[in-house]
Image (cartoon, rainbow, N blue to C red):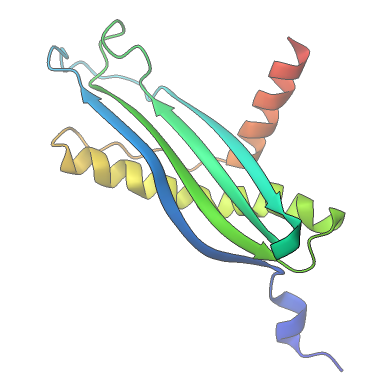
Length: 145
């Protein structure tokens, strides 16, 4: 009889993450008006069959056209998460596409809050979102164009 642990432990293992790139530019002419959060996010997934691993990269851009739109700053960053999954077969690819992205997003949110707080601007807290659904809708929209 299988242990309960064997039935609930995910085959997807989160190993680590890293910031690949980071750019922050403050708008010294910002009028200090109240602004809505304006951000875009995309992802890239690279699987490595020989090592049963995957690298998931989230690319975030906050307040694009910050000078023109009178936003307080511009932030662009790329964060990669490193995962393993046994075995790396078709059914587990979906696990990577959904769960790995969902696992990595809170780290990205936390980094944005920390970076903006340490940059001495009002700390930006990205809203909790269904990032998998957002990326799916974005991909569908791009496909239709």
